Image 1 (cartoon, one colour):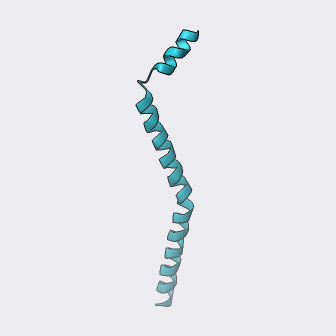
Image 2 (cartoon, one colour):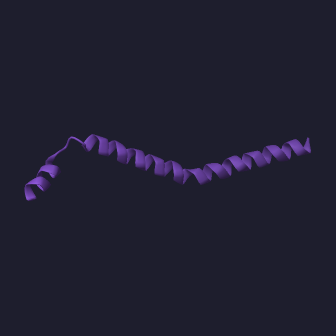
Image 3 (spheres, rainbow, N blue to C red):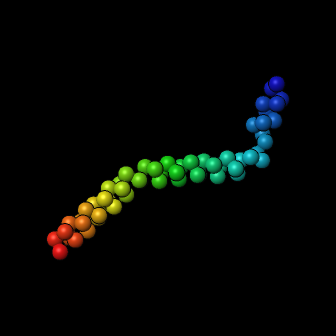
Length: 56
């Protein structure tokens, strides 16, 4: 059992896939975290445009 554990810890063949998975995880987290601010900015833009069209 101990030798299997050491062999798994020494195996580096899946490290690149794991690193790419972590990068994708952090990027998706950043996008999700930035979404509310982007939504508010777009909503404000539409409000300004709508008010300008109503005034015209």
